[in-house]
Length: 247
Image (cartoon, rainbow, N blue to C red; front, side):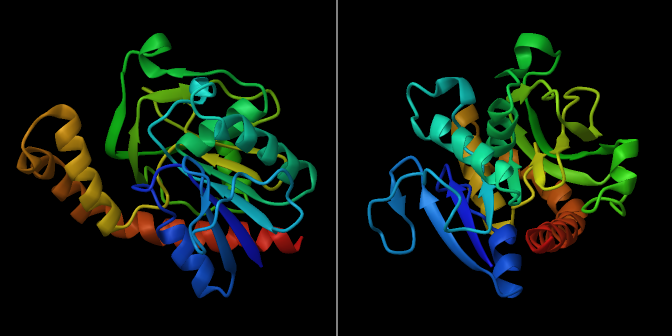
């Protein structure tokens, strides 16, 4: 199995999602979409136009918004590729920005949370409320109630017309969804590892212009309480998603 990962920010690598795929024997191509290069060879390489050379697609997170396509050409290219994988019956997984790209690829608007919701962003490990549809979902049927998953985003989206919502939160209702049998979108960061989170603490401290210790005081107890369970969930979800490529 050969999986394509679209890496939309170097501080948001595939993490657990690549590690588990590799452990299961899959090969991977990672493309740095902003700089247009193959992260393995270093050669110039943009977002592919077609799904033909790959069995599955993962679209990862980034600081940009889907509505900034004029500044980031890879966004429209990624949306077209999502549709191509979907139409070919190949698994798609969107994570954070990737989930917004999937939503937009199927016609749903993406916008800043503060435009329509009371909250301006979600950050930290916060609980998911699984929808009834998750109970029969091939990936999520045994997800722990109120599982705490890592968030860092200020954008959200409306649910595409074809989508089945799988989880929700009061402050940001559209947390995860499925379109058809093989296209999934997760607003939360399934991919995170301890190393990734350590880097994000530095970036968040700089963004808020506060000492790193202030951020760590908030996030460290959450990491200790929730990262292990999320990683177990993410690995199980990734394995089941990969199995969809065989069906």
